[in-house]
Amino acid sequence: MDKYYVQMENVNLYYPSHIYNATTLKQEVFSLLKLQKKKEKLDDVHALKDFNLYIREGEKVGVIGHNGAGKSTLLKTIAGIYPIKSGMLEVKGEIRSLFDLALGFDLESTGRENIMYRGLLLGETPKRIKEQEQKIIDFAELGEFIDYPIRSYSSGMLIRLAFAISTSIDGEILLLDEVIGAGDASFAVKAKERMMGLMGKAKILVLVSHDLNTIEEVCNRVILVKGGNILMDGEPQEVIDYYKNSVR
Amino acid sequence: MKVIIRKIYQTRYFWSHLVRAELKNKFRRSKLGILWTFMNPLLLTALMSTVFGTVFNMSFADYAPYVLSGLIVWELISSSFIGGGYSIMTGEQYIRQFNHPVIIYTLRSALVFTITFVIAMLSLGFWMLIVSPANVILGLITLPLTTLLYFCLSWAITTIAGFTNAKYRDYPQVMALVIQAVWYVSPVFFKKDMFTTNPTLEALFNLNPITHILNLIRDPFLNGVMPTITDYLYTLGTILVFSLWAGSIYKKNSRKVIFYL
Image (cartoon, rainbow over all chains, first blue to last red):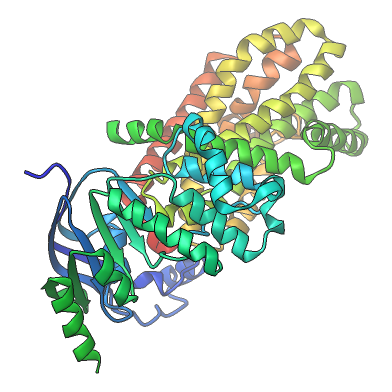
């Protein structure tokens, strides 16, 4: 048995339809009293269909496919954020997920406070964040602005800070959703370098991206997802070529 | 159960930080900061006691601490029911990215409400120190247990409220109405003798758990006596009912709740 792995067997995931029909307590009471007709029911969305996947240590998996194919859903399922309806999901190793960098900032707090905030959110201890703080500030090139409320930051500064924090803590299983570059040209180079380092250190990487060049560069296995299922699984070159041809 | 407790412990730095940040924000927003939490019930009490005291013809000195204690506890209860509704929704961004147990967001709200309660209690403490210092000793002896019980109650309520509000977005409006109705049958401002004119009202008064929950503060601080066993039992019973309810809601919805956000 591998020390780190992700295993999915016949995993089914549905987005229940009732989430699209926003209900209120008033509606619920009225429909109970038969005063209001129940809204037309939409079907549940079957987002992952009997999904089978095994990722072993050392694999850097790129996930490609059209919009709505289930790429991000797959990532969030592995991260344990979405509940699966049936099947088996087992993950061995500490998960580190980078989905949306700018999410979860507190605009009223200073940059320094937000470093602590996000660091704790990512599962660090206050002591370890304090040790990393200066490195993060330097990397984000924020200088004195670090003590200003981040409400006053430009969007570029915000992204740099978010990127610096999120990439300063590494994990065993790294899940990435379209977050490779950030900021202006000069920062983008630095960011990419850092990202490569982070991805290199991870025991397992799952990368969702539309940037096929990056996928080819980073990954040693690529899966093509379509309609909540794996259409193709194999060598990066082979799968990417197939995908490119199918688009054409 | 064990797993949840372990996960709550593992994320302790995170949620305790959320609590601190929320308190800090709360106090940063108003210039007077922490003083406001302290002053607000006092000013309200001055207003209410003057109005109600005149209407019901009661002496200010007797009635004011009654109103103050009522206000402080009522604030905890009503904010748990109404403010607690937002507990999970404000954690949305975190819930979308991390699979921390959702209950830590309702825990955060309950802690914020309880800490606010303790700060507000200082105003009652000071008041009684001037009026009848002997009561304060008994008050301080009973306060830790009372605070713990209030916290448990608040956590259970915020959990129920948080999940309900995630699903039904009109929950706060509906709940505000319900809470207003409960207020009229609770001795927050009204004194016991106002209920005794009508036997139905009196029975309601005695059965209302809020009466007993309030007694945990009023008996020691205002009357200088220990709260009765009945008061403790009623409070514990209420906590048990709400906890079981919260537990079943949590079990059913903790994984699903992300779909409602």
